[in-house]
Length: 142
Image (cartoon, rainbow, N blue to C red):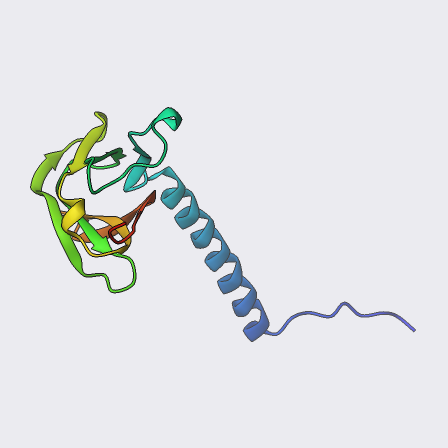
């Protein structure tokens, strides 16, 4: 008896071709996204271990970061739980990707106890993001 070669049906060939095409598109899209700079990079708080913890009731909080795109940005301090804005540190400030941007929260003492994050809105991109690695925990009065 002679073995016959099984040939796929036209529907199976079409599904296989579509799967190969979708895989190629996914790989191209992933590479494109990998090549884009992040919105925020290099975030940090101006603090030295010898200072101990920063007391926001008596000291301003200074932090910095780089942006990945030239855009007008608005930088706000928001409550972590509610997302409520407690301070706007810069409104529609033109920012470029290379220089480090510095901001100072001087009225942290007026904010209620809680945890706060830095939110950045990019006007032209119409995107808002939370700055990674920067969070402030404020305690009530001693």
